[in-house]
Length: 234
Image (tube, rainbow, N blue to C red; front, top):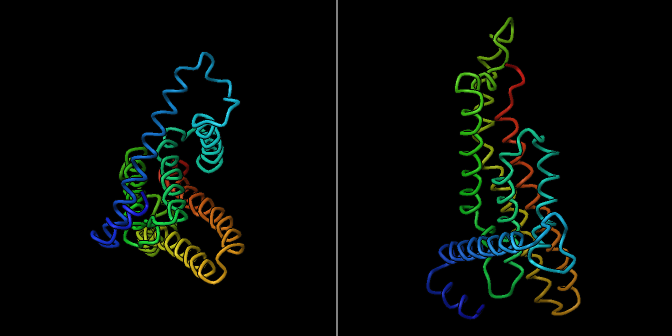
């Protein structure tokens, strides 16, 4: 399968191959999620965890982790946004792990692809923020309190906050791109030099890096959502 994928990658080009990889990962994640949901529905008592090593058990573990992370970063009152943040984590993690499989390209070492995911997050948290508090109150988040000296300071703070918000997709994409590119470059170099023992150690380290970078991407997504939908100063 990897040989066929290499042939397609050679014909399509690196950027198109990254898109093919992303589509493949999306299909695998979607199909596995549907199968896990179907398995859960067939259980007489779905609240009891599966004692076997199965797809359902894996999704139970991931679901529990995402629920804990979402409650910590966004609060229980914002659980309605958790499906989006959860799929962001699962998708980015799967994309990162794909790069550890010989013969497959890792989409997250393409900055344009990472920027596309970051822009999707940017559009969604702004949309939810405006829908939750209204456009005027959402802009007040950026201006600050409408009273006293703060009303005047808002003239300075507002453009700074707008620039800061607009830079978020860039920093989100760059962070993922830089870390994943560096990790897989190190793995490739040490694999060529030592062939066996050291690459295995770097493979384990790379797996941890894949998880951590997906965690950071999802955590920042949750934080941006929480900041956008906050009602505090109203």
